Length: 404
Ligand SMILES: Cc1cc2nc3c(=O)[nH]c(=O)nc-3n(C[C@H](O)[C@H](O)[C@H](O)COP(=O)(O)OP(=O)(O)OC[C@H]3O[C@@H](n4cnc5c(N)ncnc54)[C@H](O)[C@@H]3O)c2cc1C
Image: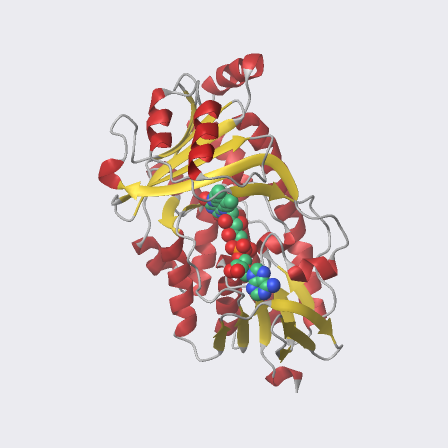
């Protein structure tokens, strides 16, 4: 009977939809429970490392994703005060040769759409919008989920892909709420021709300064320009009008490079994101219930890998379920075992990189000086542990030639 029940995926973010697609491609019935009425509407840019393209191939969406992608020639860090180059990842041909796949920037709505369209083309995926999970029970031979409006939905197993404030996690892992780091973000997309001509616009650029940064890159065939402003503030939960937010922004970035000030002037400051992660844990599965993505291991966005990790999780999880032939407990344990070290490393190294981006004073001088000596290959070596990716079937790292 359990075999006939669908697997319940809670959350239709990038991780949840990727998991549904992966499981459905392995012949499983899947039902996605999504709290919001409309799916995938967070409309900002996202960067994707080469490691996630192997996952897209497995999911059958690589071509669609590539069609919507922008291919930056370089991914750079500039010093936010002086404008000098601190670090550069050459993302041209040598990068593709080294890592086998490109580095891209893509509109989140487009990426979500690629995954969702592929799901819609399969008759074993059902999506239930306006279905917010309130609680669940593992009944041993199946799971029972209850929505906030009182509907009861049974499944063979349950996968929490419900993001940073996960309801599934609250029951599986005993711990404190997510850890805010004292920084907030504002995100904006402007028409390409409004983007300041004074900045390099083809590249992905992070301007790192003491207590603040900006990330910028083009989207959709260079018709749009994505800007994210991130900064430290003593009042992360402040709820204020746009004028007050703008004042705080301008004070915070007062010493920033003039090009950054031009970008800030066009920021939409209506909405603020409070940035947080969690300390990594070894276990995030129990019985017929597991988690993935931000629900399992939320990370700071320093490496731009949160969504990439969620999609890697999704594909490895689908393979693990397939290999265990309906033994969900074994499947989830194996999946967790191969994922936790990699995910934890991303969380921990993202914290270190966060510090690196935001250095001030002498530490900043040392950073800038030390980085000058790095060759293209040195930079590739530093990133190989992420970008070499993992094997789809086993979830194990797949170092290529030249990896340290
Ligand atoms: C400013 C910023 C920039 C970023 N840039 C990048 C980047 O460039 N590259 C990258 O790889 N990552 C990036 N990330 C990280 C990335 O956005 C996340 O890691 C990723 O979206 C996580 O996906 P997810 O599916 O696990 O969770 P989410 O995207 O959070 O999806 C969770 C879904 O679950 C639903 N949900 C929540 N609770 C319930 C419930 N109780 N019942 C039913 N549904 C529920 C939500 O409505 C949502 O649809 C960035 C993050 C931020 C904040």
